[in-house]
Length: 284
Picture (cartoon, rainbow, N blue to C red):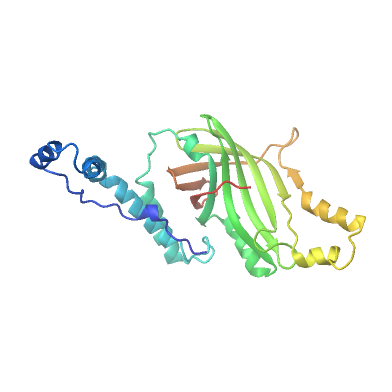
């Protein structure tokens, strides 16, 4: 899956814009009623020049993020990556992690809150989904997200792993159904969270036009039974709890190695695997 690097990842300029000399500024002040817009632009340019000139680290971080996204671009979210590609991507991930807040800064749950789209992973429990779709052509795996619900929290929250999938000719392409794995998480340390899985659900069934036509042909009056079937499929939700009073909920340790306004990097501790996410629009 190709990922276009957003415009925000372009290299920031390192040469500050021209700032008028004191003599020029005094001449401008001597003419308060002439060219007020020019004066405003010069003042604004001078104010903007300082942070740009004094933040080479920010520019370098954006460059490293851009290089990481470019490295994962043609890997089909990790499934098609070969050994050499994986090694190069790991180096790019580490380069971005080096620009992160580091171990000493607490995790900002307000920044974590929201929806993140998977761009790349080396985790076997996710790659198996892509492998299944490769072996079973009718099966399609669409977008994969992690949705964190932890706004105004400092101790933890809820994370939902969302997989869009479909079956050719039966469901809408790529987005025909949703597999959702929900978990609670608690913050164990400044960068580690512990996931405690609670439920697996299948929902948001969207049948294809072909199947709708088979259930309720457009040329015939729709019967009560056909309407009931369509309504049932539309509202269908199957859920399986993975925790209970008599069994311990499965869990896992997750290390969030980098987080900013548009990129999230994580590592599954124990099971292995790295995850590269970018910020996405809220799920509907």
